[in-house]
Image (cartoon, rainbow, N blue to C red):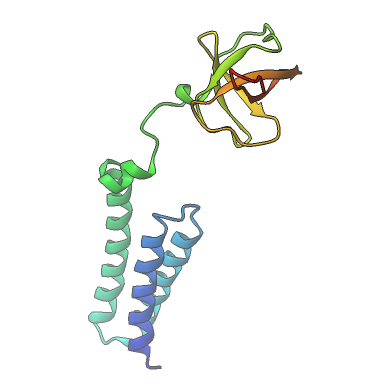
Length: 163
């Protein structure tokens, strides 16, 4: 493979890896993409004639900086960025419960799917709970089966036959 083919392959691989970083966060793919761009710049410096070698390296550096600025400044406001981030603040995802214990047998409603843990509402309060045994769908009636050390276990409740 000729150096120009390796150069183009590294540039394209860098774009691809940095683009995939959007959907698989963690930084590893983005770092590999940046390394691919740096390797392409080094190959360009060594294989292109002046002034194209320096122009190639500067263009890759400029593209990297521009990509980073666009990512930080504009991506979170885009439709894709909004769909990948939380729209609500974290207080909506925490249960608010006092130190008092909930009574065994209290009936409430699952606010989220209990797989096995999730949120439920008992007497107008949001509570973190864990389902005993099977998963329980959101909106199902549930009953507290046990409490221990701040953990509340529930089972699905059927009004006609109990559990």
